[in-house]
Image (cartoon, rainbow, N blue to C red; front, side):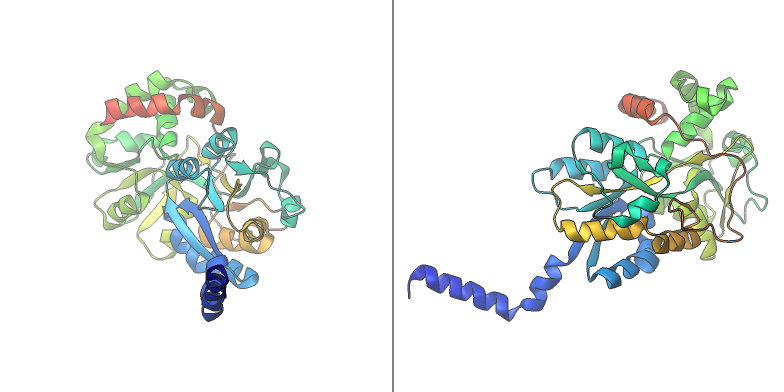
Length: 341
C-alpha cells in the first residue's frame, strides 16, 4: 500500500469513528444578533427552528456595528451565515457587498412579508418591528413617563441612563434633544445636529451612565440605581416586565420611534441550505407569532396576528432618514464623545 493510500484509509477510518461529531459540526449554524435578545431567542425561538430543521444555532450576541466589523473582517471566509441587525447597519453591509440576496425560491415565506418590510430588492427583510420609548423603574415612577422632558428633570439628577450613539438606540435621544431644543417635529429635528448636541450637553448632570452594553444597563434600571433609561425597545423592556422585573415602557406624548429588525444571509457564508431554512422560519407566521407574544413586537408576515391585550402605542412610530444617519454617523459619534465623554 502506498503512503497516500494509507493516509486516505486513516482519514476514512477517523471519519467513520466519529460520525456524530462530523454531523454535529455540519449542522451548526452561526447566527449573529443583538446581545439583549439572546435570552428569549434561546428559550422560545431557536428550539422551534432547531427541531424542524435538524440544526444547532450558535448565537453570537453583540452590537450591530460589531457584527458589521466581523462581516468585513471575515469577508474572504465568513464564520456567520445569518445576521439579525438594525436597518441602518444592514444598508451599510449591502453597500459593501456583504449580503446575499433573499429569494422566494429558497424562502417561500418571503412572499407573505409585507412589501414595506422587504428592503433593497430583497437584500434583507424585516421580521419584526419593535417600538421605542422610555424605560423606567416602576418602584420609583409608578405612573411612568409622560414626556421626554423627564430625562432633564431635576428629580432625576444622577439617575438617567443613555445608550451610546455607538448603539443604534442612541440615535433616538439625539432626535429627542433636537426636537426639545427647537420645537421642530421629529421629521425636521433629525437634521439639526447642532441643536441636538446643545441640548444633550445640558443633560450631563442627570446621567448615571452611558452604555454600550444594554444588559448591564438594564441591571442598573431594575435595581433602582437608575430611574429611567432612554431609547429602549419593546422587545427588551416589556420582556423583562413580563418576567416580573420592576420595569415598564412609556410612550411619551411627543411620540415613539420604530426600529424594524432585519434578517440577512451573509454572502459566501457556510451552510447555505441551513441559512435559507433559518431565514424562512423567521419570516414565517409561527415564529413571528411567538415573537409578537414573547417579545412584544409587531409582526411583518401577513398571516401573523398581534396578540390581544398587547401594548401598542398610539399614532405612527417615527422612522428616521437612515441614509442621513449613515452619512453622518461617524461624525456624530466623534462629536458625542467630545460632548458627552
